[in-house]
Amino acid sequence: MEKEPVRLIIDDALAIIRLDHNDTRNALSQSMIQHIGAALKSCEKRNIRAVYITGTGPAFCSGADVKALVQQLETGGPDALSVYIQSLADSLHNEVIIPIRMLNKPVIAAVNGVAAGAGFSLALACDLRIASSNARFLMAYGNIGATADGGSTYLLPRLLGMGKAIELYTASQPIGAEYAREMGLVEQVVPSNNFERHSLEIAHRMAKNPTVAFGKVKQLLNNSWSQDLESQLKDETTAIGDIAHSTDFQEGIKAFSQKRMPWFQGL
Image (cartoon, rainbow, N blue to C red; front, top):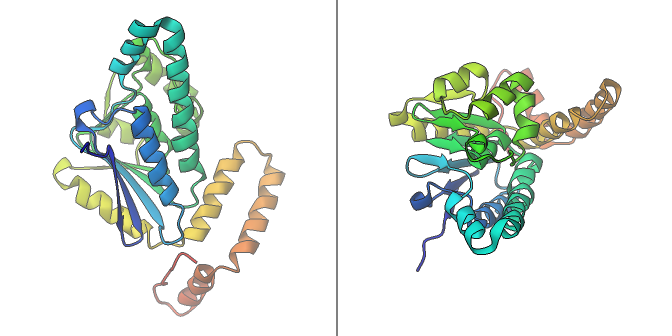
């Protein structure tokens, strides 16, 4: 029986999505994308309060399976290649990237190794990126004469600025974890020998935070790119009024006034 390319593990309120196809360095085939999408769908349940995405072996995700692209070209020519790669990009965007951005809870990319091409884009789509000291980031698209996908042309200039986005694409050279942290691409770098334990500790702490409030803030931040200040302020007023009905906010203000730690339940 063939091993599933993605494992979903529920650990208390944390969902762990582990890309587990070491033979291809966790490349994004149609099967891999569909399995990630199904795992993300499961994470919509209320009892899941944070999501942790990581890889196995030396790679977080190596991007598209280039061997499959070559096979399409050799068997069907440029037209077949074009249809295949558009289908792959559509699946990645609709089943993985958009669901991560729309998920109303924190999604952490635990980048254990190489994140290249669409794997780089997958990490960008997450809310936080924690990198192993062994991690490497590579746009990679330019190395094969491809345009970028996976939302990287939208997310990268907003995260780092237009100049850095163009530099990372045109240079097509891997950058180390520490430089990625210095430029703002990742939030933390953890020594490789302690990486999984430490990154899971962070994810578990996030799973104990006020999930409803985070979801609303994530939505506000997502919408802020397409709104003027006045519209954004109105949405902030609506959101903070809505959050007054949440159990976590009520617990939070009581705990603050009583000088104790709050107990958030994600409600």
